[in-house]
Image 1 (tube, chains in turn purple, blue):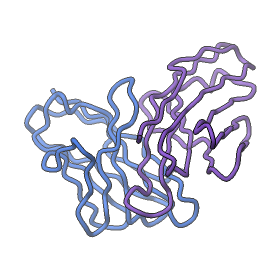
Image 2 (tube, rainbow over the protein chains, first blue to last red; image 1 turned 180 degrees about the vertical axis):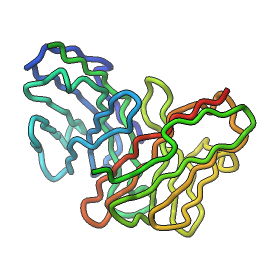
Image 3 (cartoon, rainbow over the protein chains, first blue to last red; image 1 turned 120 degrees about the vertical axis):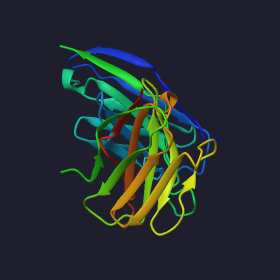
Image 4 (cartoon, rainbow over the protein chains, first blue to last red; image 1 turned 90 degrees about the vertical axis):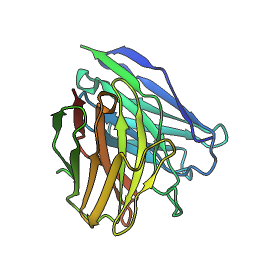
Length: 116
Length: 116
């Protein structure tokens, strides 16, 4: 119930393409869904996050789409660039107090390669 | 600028020795910090929740006597890997929650531990 399933495992696109990474969860108590970008040897950096009360959120070239009934959310990267090549992780947590606050459950990660 | 600082970024030690990793919250006081572990090409797994002024809460399967956590102030948590063995070699990452403002989690740059 605590799992977050992420796909695909790896993704290759050409510069300018729109990679899409998908995640699915089971625990309906999750109410905070962030996406992180991680470069080799570095800690993950928060890209964008969404809460279940909205279906879409955009920040720059990054868009999260959220489908509460399907318990799925996805990351779209518009006009992808070679500098976007990194590992992307979706995650989920219960943000509203309690002992689970702030404890992120991560997806398995997607290695994105953007070719020039 | 960085929100979370970790030190050291890399450490190599001999089997049987202990290693201490520091995590500092730079931008705000953090009553709670989180320690994650990441093996090569894998996702992040929560190890424990560090609570200022009280005992840490460990996730299932994490040995609390092996991974000692001290959260002595609102800006500093330390993780000590005691009697380290080669299988403890991993990337250890701490995170801090901006609980008051946004509830978002920010990660440190990570500490690469190699046990020979």
